[in-house]
Image (cartoon, rainbow, N blue to C red; front, side):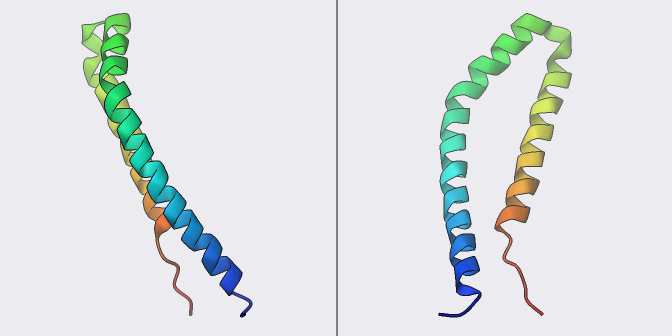
Length: 77
């Protein structure tokens, strides 16, 4: 057993765990996003639709960038 093998296992678990979280979030998001966005539009008014959609897009982009950084394999020199 080498010194780095524990870290490798931890990263592998993180990648597998992240994949499970992505699938679960997409399933929940598919059910919840539509009604939640509709409720937010009703509550805030029709004129805020572009802002609300921009916020949702920014959140998705942030999550994508975080997942990309978290699951990117590290390179050793």
